[in-house]
Length: 387
Image (cartoon, rainbow, N blue to C red; front, side):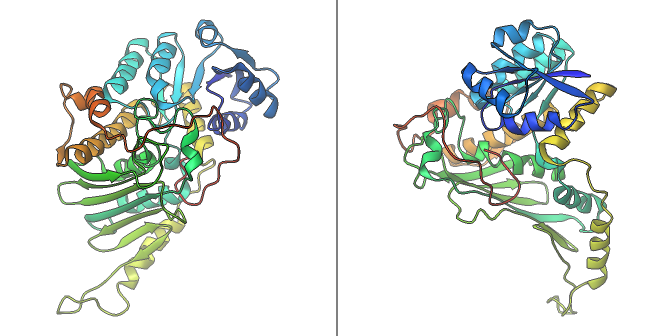
């Protein structure tokens, strides 16, 4: 039985706590920690966690009965909290994004290595049947070589979204939807295709006037023979998400769609396309073995299994770092108005985060700031950023 604690009891903590509560024979929540203890107490009452103590962070570090901690705080705090927890002998699951800078990510990875503990970064959309099917189809080779991937991380957030105190500044949030929403889509892209060779991008803040950071960006990720286009946005009405993979022989997409053209002697599409190939891809999808748990419960289940068996988690700190490296390259490319090659070297000011803080445009001045926002999290598309 693993003893679990959660640091940061804002809205995303509910996904973690509800996930842990699905496995009562494998773990129990013993502690909640928040800068505002009353918020932690309210979460304890809301979820019926009568056996969980509300503790300070120092008290949590000193507790010898805590095995695993979920870090559910704003991005700017992820690195310092995670490093302290790992050094204190706790295994850690940290929410996305791993940290705003590559230097912080590497400090977290070094703390993991030095402590001998485990670090996992939340990428809960890998634990979804529809997206697992997409990866299985790519891995099958039925599509042929991939030529183009279109990824739409398209969300809509009204003006009050950025009234929350930690949102809307480069220092505290680390960026806009490129970092905090499209991080999921970037992780999925890297999971399916690996790291790109270079990145170019543009970005702006179209109308969120209480936010310094971008509210829309468009990036091109270049592989050896593949180009991926990524839109990251909180200005898209309808929140129509898309992940479309174009192979030489067929294309697949989520929401699920399969197409396979065949050529006439002159190269133009033949009527009806390659029906046989479409049927083979559909059969592959139909044969997918459904995951027992999806989303946060699916990833937390994997983390529990990793700790119980001594293996690595399916999503580790290196995975989290790779997504941050691509985001960093997008920001660098957009700000410097040039193509950025990967990997980003450790002597680059973009690696440390200094260049982003010094050179990022402040589109608007943040003037409104509240500790909490009323209302529920509603999601109009997929994947789910729960942000």
